Length: 123
Image (tube, rainbow, N blue to C red):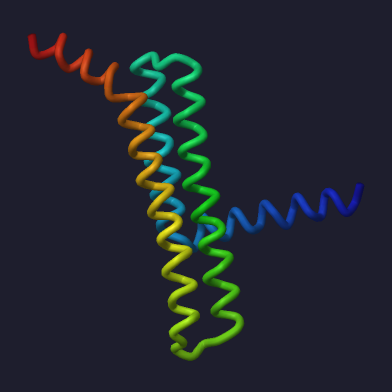
């Protein structure tokens, strides 16, 4: 049981590190929170909220992996290295792909109820 608690403690420290040191992690989490609040306000069904939550979590997990990859590369070499840069760029690209996916999910889920509210407000 002690090993499990130690592992959980280490995991929480890793997450705290990400939120304290990675600006994009904080931005993604903040935007995700706003999206979830919008979903509640717009009374998005439970299935839609689940899709939003999955999209948000995928982005946050990708950002955490990106941080782990970047820090591992920094540990290995401080010198300018083409392959190290490629690895960092690919990891950042993965975060970008997940963020674009999350935007598409957000538009698909929040778009119709938001459009409905806007249409009723403007007419």
